[in-house]
Image (cartoon, rainbow, N blue to C red):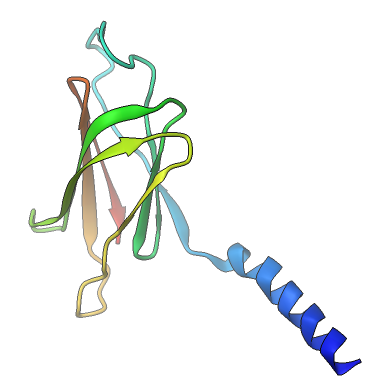
Length: 121
């Protein structure tokens, strides 16, 4: 009986834990006036932040996406070239050592596009 109670408790905790995640969405800005005739003209990635993890997803697959994440002072915290798709790409960004949340920016470069956004890290 006790084992069933513990299993039920673990099941409830496992199902409820994602509700309390601190997940925020990052809004990317880009230039709508440009006419993009090559590459992925309608593929705009979505970026979400969950504490130390930044997840980038897109409805179609984007190759050679240059990802740059900077802190509030412009220092590069992360720079890589990624393949972004529907499954998403997760990048680990550690919090600063003081425990303070900084205003962090993200920039994505692909197919002659430059997208940028900011979120509180």
